[in-house]
Image (cartoon, rainbow, N blue to C red; front, side, top):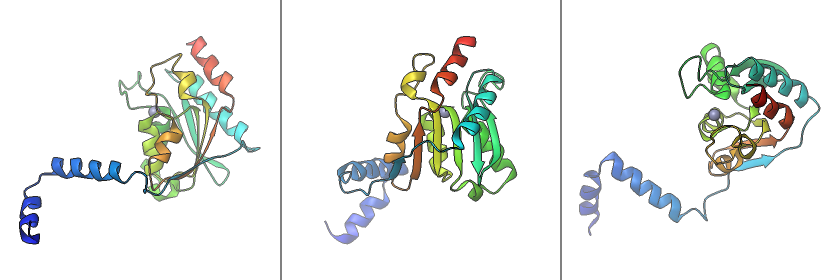
Amino acid sequence: MSQKTRGRRESRLGPRDALAMGAGIASASAAARPRAKAKPSPVRPEDERFMRLALAEAAASDFPLGAVIVREGKVVSTGRNLGVTNDDPTAHGEMAAIRRFVAEHPAKDLKGATLYTTGEPCPMCMGAIVWCGLGRVVYAASVEQLSKHVGQIMITSRALAEATPFADIEITGGLLAPEALALFDKN
Ligand SMILES: [Zn+2]
């Protein structure tokens, strides 16, 4: 095929074809793709205090999941699950905290911030977290643990971050998990 012919053929392809081609290229070059940086990180001294604030959000929620965002040692946003209250299945605690922040601040100020959440972020929330460039996630109960109480998409936050070449994020899991899970028994 000449260069000219190929150009004409490709110009007839719609966006769906382009997406399909992109997916093919991505899987073919998966081995060569640079690994995203999803680093496990140890619990830090300040983590418990912020996780307790997330637990308080969860306890006050219509569904016991909550989150806080911390930047330079200060809480800059909070969120609790509002799925029932707002009749919005996307209103997870992490989404609520991110949306509240960006409603009032430039989104770039989320870069490098830490999000504390009582439940490991689902793929929707983890997607939002990496799109916003947060630097660290600290969660209490894991997706695996949550799945015993509520339906979960069985993809870990780490798996999503590792599949995202531009992600550069630290992940700490399991902090105060029993307390986060106990909230489901009170519900
Ligand atoms: Zn979520």
